[in-house]
Image (cartoon, rainbow, N blue to C red; front, side, top):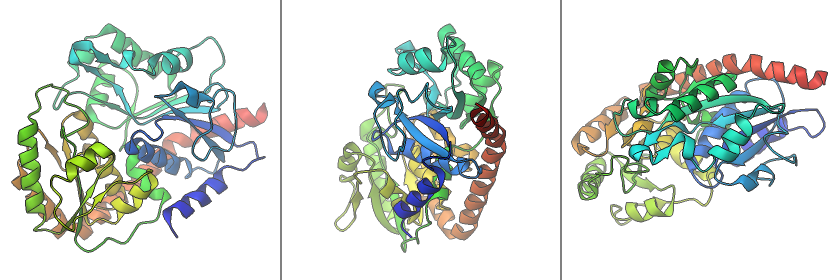
Length: 386
């Protein structure tokens, strides 16, 4: 059964048209970042462990029009996807950041006003239950979060979001440190993207296929503003050359910029994969023997299929891999030899690592079920009572 058919069956099971199903809205992106789609799928996998029907709605945090326009597999039309939902979920993204000497902060994002201030933190009217799931930090590599903690507006926001949320779950240790310092209750659980594979079939690994994802800045951004692109390009050349000794490479690009960058390193006969939508990436990542990725959620999603994965990072989002036990290497001072040695160890013990990852995925799903069941049950009872 193909993954899109399986997804359709799951949708049919969880969106009955006349059963009074919960309306659950996801604060996410649509057609912007494949990783956000993986996170959303992972949260849906957790929700589907709970025997309460729901209809999904999606708000693209980059587009206020998405509050009213239908998207993806939505089966309901509502006036406002926040106010008309029973539950609103911040679906796994950086929530805590203070960058470039305050030029970019949690409180001046393009969606802060119309989503956080006007809706989530607005106490002037009855609001849906709010969950902050998979919340993360986005700070420079090895940053300790002090710039965020020293900013009163940022700390006020983090505390207010914590008070508003019925459940806060963080995906990296720096986010946990920030909330611990601010005495905001939270849980520490693997990033929801790790669970995306639970809604889709596990593809058969292709012999010796190693998925490689590379980004021009070694991550999404140059947060320290001193990234050496020439050094990184040379590291990528060396890395790819050595990885070829372990298997056949496929370059997995999430956008056209990555596709063009990957073509610098691809040899004749090596594919540079770029899909027009997010779902085909699930089959691509699940079919690999091993994944080495700049895209944190590419590695995390692949690992959820039992694929041994390595993260090459340049900011604290790479810490997402720590809760899963994925090897993490810094892009700025990458030693390709160390990465390849790690890759070789993972391939040698692939069966053991795959079993560990799949077992952890099951444990994580059960943990989310444990956390979410009383919340969904309470909302469902209130909805039916009304």
